[in-house]
Length: 125
Image 1: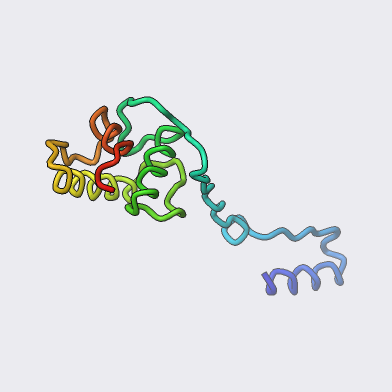
Image 2: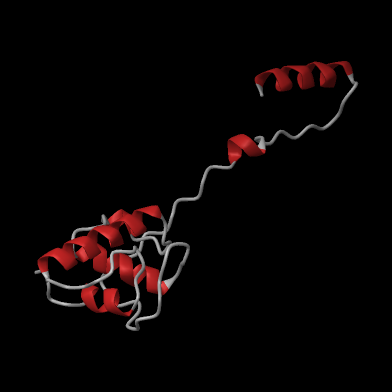
């Protein structure tokens, strides 16, 4: 950028160029927008629809909040996007729930009817 300014200044001084405006190049100006992190102080979803990797929105936020309450996901992981972190947290929850609560819960990383019920249950406490 400094070299471009020097060349432009020289061209302006010699009268070969007039009126330049410098802007940052797209590569340097485009920083990734920070992900939205949601508060788990309210209920975002109370149903039991299938929620799985790749999903986004309120169902995912609710899954993430339930996982956060139970210690399987950090507060920063509550972003409304069912990605690898949420998938792995669901798997870990399903494994623990199945083991501690003597349940036949599937360990598949998918939040269906039975996993929704497990997330909202008192076991494990």
